Image 1: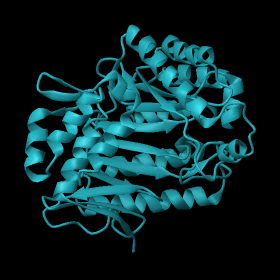
Image 2: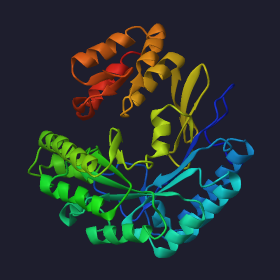
Image 3: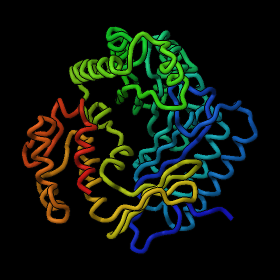
Length: 382
């Protein structure tokens, strides 16, 4: 019998508002990737078996009435498009039968350029996907080679243009602070994204994680730049991206993401506003909560349990990832339960990381660049 996704339901549990489905397969492992994913052939029989398991889990969640309040769905990986049109269609069809996958539900699918086809674009649109998120990372072929990406710049351009035959809500990920990447190369990639007319752009500084090919190369001094130099370059590139994107009508709504009006990623905002989310698939995390506690659960195991006070502090930290920040009223309310909350925000103001505007605490320009200091200060409260 299939286990209930997210584990046992808590007494008084708040309904899930977001669903994440994990596809842990890809064509090849990128040099920087430490995610729960595996490079296998697109016709490997394990893919069909895995989709069978996902469908059983979706049906179990539906029978337990866990899907009725969902506002967003996000299918990520890995590379979901690597598994092919047939398996994706099976998954989406089962999902549409198990929940109300209406146009009002934001349904995002992660896409890699090398595996998108015209038939897939048409079927994804017909089966309820409303938003595509492209892992492009750069439009510089030399940078893509350093990252170990499976596509080149021209494939990325063509795939985005193909997606635009059906989809208006298209997001594009770019990375910065990559060995060998110049500020001019990065600027050109942002300008390319703008010229393609996408609605949403996310900018991620490269983090060189343990156990990755890039970590091995860095440890063997294969690159000219040190990690400190790359970090400084990433900060400069983040400033460059903001200037370009804002000048072209985008607004920054969270630490890494910019959107045209009406195209913010609602799924990500669920995370940053402390809404419960259900994870289905290998390594997918669920967050469930009631008035007493917040629990994170993955692969049959409880990962973390937060008290009510710890959850309140976490909500402040997550809220400071967004441009709207958190209300002074909420900070004051948390301060009544968690001592020194208000003084922590005063300290962040003194450091120039946070501003108080119109009754809200929001990140400053410096705060965007040194967000980890904001997050660490707040998490230390509880």
